[in-house]
Image (cartoon, rainbow, N blue to C red; front, side, top):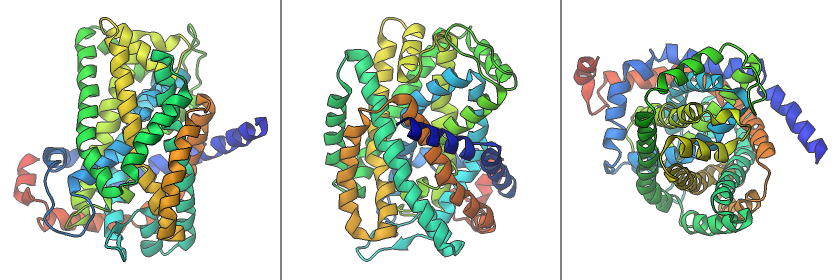
Length: 460
């Protein structure tokens, strides 16, 4: 087992070295500039036509889900335990400064995710059974004309999400339940496996129906609790933000149970956890978004901006500020346990731990029922529809296995898989950026957007 740890550490340092960070951030900056800072200039109209119309019904165009269902299902896939356990491990390892680099990855990641969704919908295909399939593998194949990159991407999707979804999310949920109630992780794993099986065996339409209800509820609950924390501890909030900005560029010294962190480690862990949280640049979200019933690719692509904003800018920030103002990040604990203790410290009674536990359960469950779809579509691209049912059953088995894993190694393995998966997608985004710019211009200039060009100009 020690050999496996060493191999993974070597790969992790390779894929999350300076070249990978430069590629990831550089792609986001490149796309942000080419798209005219869409995440800033068009933010108001994007939120109005995504979150503001999330329950809008379809208008009869091709697709398996309404635009809102696809968007909420994709949000359910990214708003997982990474928002609770991932932020906690980032601060526990890299200190408060890691949060700043998560924000940077999120800002430029909005343009990245917009681009990959636009390409995913443009190059999607209608299957013989009438279902719609899309994702990075399709634009790498049909747009970039690279079978090798599309195949490599699909292989990494399957490996990544069996680790990051079935194992990591289950592991985090199981440990949080054990922390609160002392229930053995394997018992939690079996229950989660059964609950997940009920949904995924019903296919994408059942998944969309569940996420349409679950995502607004779980996100709203956590955000409202976070607002309560900030209101009750408002005098400590400015200091928390100041600490984030100061320690983002200065190595953090050891204090209490915190071992200290070098600047390179702070940046690395911030970007790694940021990507794990919002998945911008990985090419995964387009797999779900491509099933949306929309008339134009950008009509769905604007969900990418909203998705990253809700996931990292809102939910991850709430977790981070709570952990920092609580002071618990210096105690040496990590993961869900750190977040639970932080919320307990900043809220009266034991309400904080129950909110975190409930959120961890909902976030983890939402991921388990949605990211399985990524593996299904990747498997179908490689082997055909015959592999879909085996993947669903194997997913259920891996949920049980995930409940028995060790947290630190699982997170490290997930980081490695994330990095490898992102490489072919980022290459595709760079070379197909001209297509994205063209699609964006069509959507706004030719009034595909319901708000129309006149309202857009007025909003600016």
